[in-house]
Image (cartoon, rainbow, N blue to C red; front, top):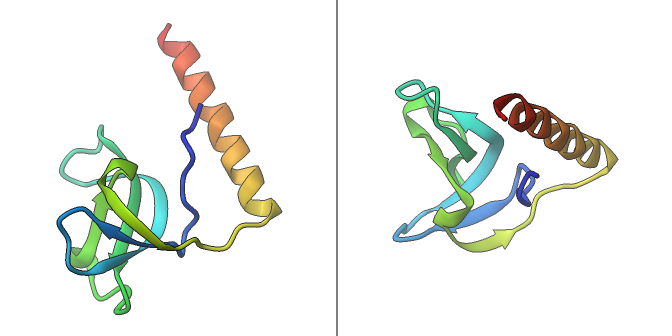
Length: 95
C-alpha cells in the first residue's frame, strides 16, 4: 500500500532547513542511485525551478512542517489508486 503522499504543489519545510520547498513530483529516483526511490522531488520556494542542481529528493520522514497542501481532484485520486496497484503487483512479484 502506498503511504499517503502530499500532492504536487504542496509547500513544506524540511527538518533542519531554513528554506521551504515546493513538491514537484512524487515517487522519484536520482541519477546517482536509481535503485533508491524517494517520496518526493522538490524545488526551492518561492524561486521554483532554477536548474537541475536545485532539484531535491526527500522522503515524508524528512518533512518538519506542511505550509500548504497542493491541488487534489479525481485525476489525482485515480493516479494514486493506479500507483497503489502498481506497487502491490511489484510486491507480489518479489514473493
